[in-house]
Image (cartoon, rainbow, N blue to C red; front, side, top):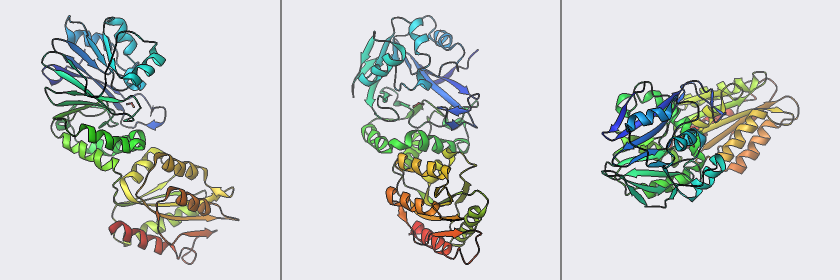
Length: 396
Ligand code: FEO
């Protein structure tokens, strides 16, 4: 038994919800699960656009056969080769041995590496298209959104963009599939967590993809994860545009590493001072408690970042070291940075945070403080300057 979800008369959404997996890519927590979407065009010719992750879809091929109602599958279009979307390729090809597999030269290299498939390939380039009858599908290469082979498929008849990972989100589709059927507030934070952690590193390529897609008629966006945007696609386009330009919002994220609570106390002290400067969006996190994906999300979201680390073996605390290295790895930019920390003997937390600041070239505000032992108002006199300076820069 399957839901028959129509995007249009001849295009079906075939999605599965994964509520079992703990970690997406064995890395990112999924408290709200994730959906794997794919799409079937049932015109004179038929095309399946992407598949789902292996083992999540029950009788995936059976569902497709039921929708095709005796017709064969003519095309399998692969917009993206990551295994969360290609797990059923083997079953599809075994069930429809004459299916033509549509992709680009990079797609086919990965396809062969994963599946050993070398036959029945139809290589497409930018602007190529296939006719299905009423529907004509054209292809746009969008490399690195999210892998090098990534492309998007555009239905020129209905103005539908099959966008791959782009415009996707964590979070299962709990009955509602379309943007007008769901409360977007359920998805928004997880959409940014998905964007910042999965796609964000390639933000400049997202901007290049936007430039290439600019001339297309886009009325509906069908991503591989999360809701289908049929009513207000400009909303998700606007969010992706803002996020990929790394235009932060007014707010400050304070992340600290603390073994015995002293650096944590300074974090709360600074948070209050930042609030007194009129900043309303303030988030304070313990790096040892909160998963890094949430920290990256909020750092992506807000303009201000204040990092605090106790010293650990004359270095930063290891999890702060990991976090800051990820900031560099992701190429996060356009941030105002404040630094604080504490130590018991020779220090190392603040010293190494300063070295990080130099490498990443965020705008370091003056007023850092490195507290020996237990903090008190005298030792933390400089935190006021951090709060005042970062708030002033954010509001400027
Ligand atoms: Fe949803 Fe890059 O895979």
